[in-house]
Image (cartoon, rainbow, N blue to C red; front, side, top):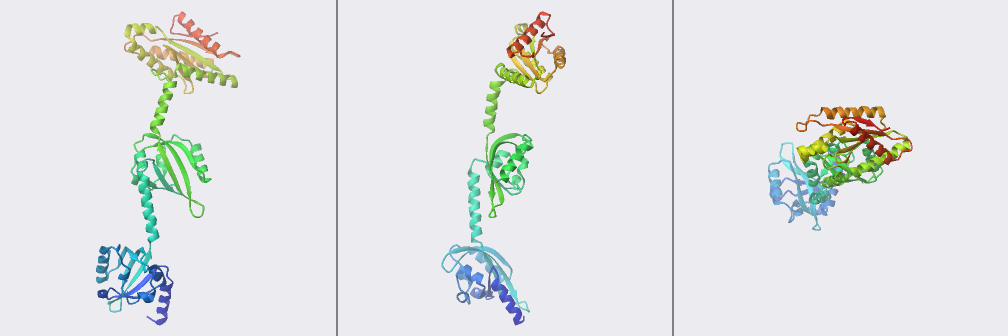
Length: 416
């Protein structure tokens, strides 16, 4: 190699960011240093004069792995590339973690004349990795589900509690996006509000209804926070949640107990009166029609007396189900008391209400109970009149019901 070219190589090595050291190939004495660039001397704390002629064993210490050094010696003897990570020691006695590669250099005849080692101090990286591992273990130990995503919402970490709450394994979760947990119970406005909040650098807190791996739903009280990188841009998102499914189920059970009739599942009388008052106010304010249909099971006392109360309860539940199926989803069916029901229909003309009542009568007449030979209803219908109070409307519907009873039952009577 020409002298100018050698000078070019020396200049390149001298200016390299990575630490580079060149030794001879005398393995018996430990391969003595011939050249080290400034990056290497800065990393070790030794000057080139202090290193030249010495083996790099001077960098080894108590925490240097003997097995790794044995592997290194074998590679040198066999003139093979060596790569590894070890703990070395600087001149001042402080330790550092180094990642190195050592390559043999051969002359024209193929004889190994030198070894070139390129090294990198990865102490900061190792410390960061150790810190990350400690944080990961700490997060795994917490009972709160925790998830971390990158800026594109790809999941890069999920703790054990998060995996348990979703039914997925950590490996199944990582690399996916939170969309895998969508239940379809939230509209686009919900997610748009979340995106706006996070994009503005604000936390987003809400109760999410998510879907587990097995398809079941769960409720999570979730807080999502944006994490900003060095340039002030969002680099990650962290989500901390709490599974509140049991609490929601208890609240829903309490709500059902407070608003639903236990036997039929219809609105109970107390809640029904509140609902009727709301519909009445809306009808008055918006000048919409409001119609009540009072329903009573004919000869219900006879059913209880002849077939027993369990049969009577079953008949009540069956009639309630027929009424619920007959009306629109917006309409309300209330168990008004005993064997009496009230149907509240808003924005429904009297003609349509009469047709509905007749369909109900036909459906009940066609119902085959298997135990009770004949099942019929009597119905009373009243539509809200101008300036009529709600109590007056109920009284007219109730009066129409008794007119149907007096007229022979199994019929509809319309209030005057």
